[in-house]
Length: 107
Image 1 (tube, rainbow, N blue to C red):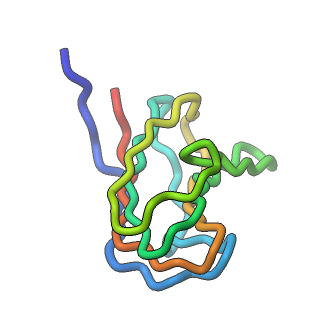
Image 2: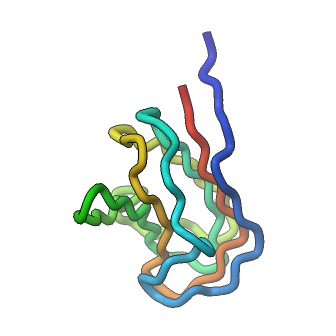
């Protein structure tokens, strides 16, 4: 059986938010204990972090082994270990526009 996906949030043509600054308009409350699939395209090569807050602890989950993503290419990552009600946000380590981003719940 193939995995199924449910869109949680998406963004299109997000202006450069600033280095290490939240890119989504508001934090996303994760809906379940299911994994998160993030697809993202950045306008400038940069490291992308999925920021996850659980309780009072925030962690920067570096995508692509903390290596800068190639600008103009769509990259997709599956992040396991999510818990219901985690607070999720996306940040770039350099001031780069985000062409598109999508967070999906997978199961």
